[in-house]
Amino acid sequence: MMTRRLYFYGSVGAGMLYMLGFSRLVLANDEASELPLPQWSEEDIKGMRDAPAVPFVLGGVLWPGGMAAEAAALPVPAGAGAPSPTVSAAPPATAPLEIADQPGTAQPKTDLSHFMPPELLSTRAAPQPAPPKSQPGVLRAVSSEYLAKAYASPATEHLLDPDGNLGETHSEDIRRFLEFHANDARIDAFILLMAGDERLPDTANLASTAQGELLGREGCLVVYAYGQPSRARLFLSRSVHGGVPAPYLASLLEDCVSDASQASDADDQLHRFLVRLSIRLFWLERMLPPLSPALVAKVASQPMPGTQSELTEIGANPGTTEADSAFLGIQIDERVWAYLGVIVLVLLLGLGGLRWQRYRLRHYVWLLPEPAGLQPRLGGQQCGGSATWVRYR
Amino acid sequence: MDCPRCSEVIAGAPVRCAGCGFSLAGLDKLLGNHAVPLERLLDTAHCLRLKDRLQLEAVLDEFERRLPQCFCTVYFGILPQGINVAEAGFWLLNHGERVSGGVVRRGVFGIAIVIDPAAHCVGVSLGYALELLLPGRLVESLLQKVSQALWHSEYAEAVSVVLRDIDRRIRAHGAGQRREIAGDAPSHTTLTGVVPKLGHQPSKVSAPAPTQIRS
Image 1 (tube, chains in turn green, red):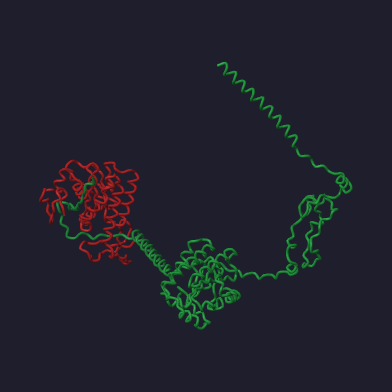
Image 2 (cartoon, rainbow over the protein chains, first blue to last red):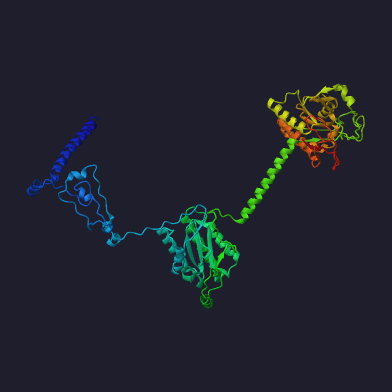
């Protein structure tokens, strides 16, 4: 027992002595490896003494530190009328340091005109005409420039967006998708995009869209109001429309609109619409006669018509066009209106009948006829024992 | 028509039941042969709470306003031994006097609803003028409909349903037999202040139908 205790204290003491010695050794090594402070040479000290007012210029427009008030003034572009150097002036070496550091001093700004070509600076952009303001709930016809751009669009361009309603990224996605579809499918899909409050005028000749290339091939054209998938109109070339039953084509458009309506975002709606359209066009191919060289020649030999009638709209009632006063997003089928009318009529009739019943109960009395030829039964003068009774347990 | 005691079918106008000998005279020996004032609600068994009583009063008011000749008395009580609800209703309608607004209403147009909460029985007795409008089978189905409510001691609700249904059945007989009040009609003051044109159209149904008069 005693031996164990001595051994324990001995080992503890040895450990403490070891740690003290080791720490002193480490401190000695740190002092030896410490980096020296920078030392100014004699020339540096002399230069600083000779020019004490020269600030330390950090360079560029970094602030504070050397930016003078003169340097903070923005250079005027050359085309703006005032003479200006093409390169911003460097801050003067003798600029007083205290001016830029004062709180009231105008802070320097980055002038992007230094990075722009001079020809852009010399010409002012012509003021853009303000787009026509649309009244809420009223559709306006697209401009003639819109139609002209649509007509002049190349046939290889499947996304026709003359007004640039789509963002650059989404537009590029749609364009690549339609090109991918056109590479594999027999029926090309073109989409003419317009704003949600726009409509095609009655005089628009869709046959001339994409330089009339739609008529010389098997294709379809979707006129799509951005954010309004229910107003989408589908036009098919006659070669496609003639070989497929009309109800199937109507269901095609309904399916696309229904799928697009499941999204709330306008970009997502367009994406879903086109994906669904692509699928349905692949299915549509199976209903068409097989593509043979003779058929290709026949389609190609068709004279180029100049009327819209060569493109057949799907699901459109003859003689009906989009009215100016069509409410956006509240286009309800006529059958729904008929059902609603019948329901409202029944409700009104029921309400009227109910009120009439209540009126009658309040304002009418009923008089019973006197019993004639009364013969008392069982000795009763008022009641002859006519009774009904039940046990309710 | 059935005997209130033995349910024997009664044909013609016998003085007493051929099956059990039941008659009003025999009943008078047990219950008395005197006239009794009839209230609309007689709750000797204390079945009704204040809320139930108010509800029933409102229903009875409506009933008597629409059918000014008729009255209905609702009796909650434990009947003596040997008397059933049909006999009690029979006795009440023949001896009761319903006085309302200084006018005595006759039991011919009366309805007696008798409920014995101890025996769990409910009966509806009708005067002569109503027994052709309300067949026994119809009244029985009506009582069967409210039997569960009675079993749950929801007396006010059950009686309200019965009265409303009876009201509706009587009015249904008078549908299409409307009589406008003519200006030159003889003036007759009724309980509701209505001056009806006297006379009734010939009934198109087997039972004599009531006539609705616009007030």
